[in-house]
Image 1: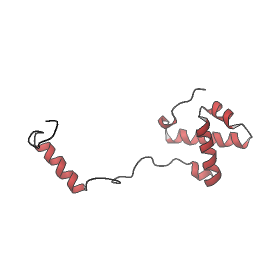
Image 2: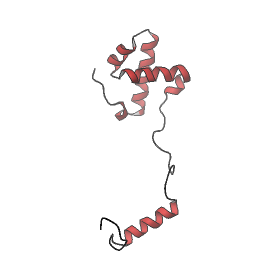
Image 3: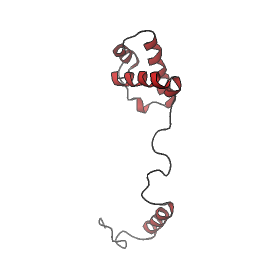
Image 4: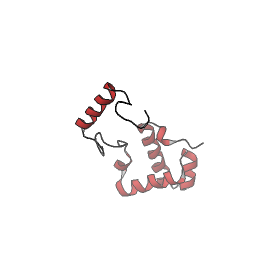
Length: 100
C-alpha cells in the first residue's frame, strides 16, 4: 500500500488508522510491517504507539487542529475592524502603501 498524506484524511479516517496500528501492535506485528500494511511511515506508527502507551485509547481520539480563534493575534478586534474599513474605503496610494 502506498503512503498517503494522512493530514488529508478526515479525522474519523485518521482515528481508524490509529486504531488499526494499535490492534496490529497488540497482535505482535513488527512496527515496520504495520507501516507497510496500513500505509503509514515508521515514525507515524511509532508516534501512535507511544501516544497510546502514555495516554491510553483517549489519546488517539481526533483533536481540534490549528490555533484557537483569536489566539496569537497582532491586532485587537477593534484595530482589525478599523484597518479593514480603511482598506475598503481608500485606495492604496492614499494610504501610502509601499506597493502602490
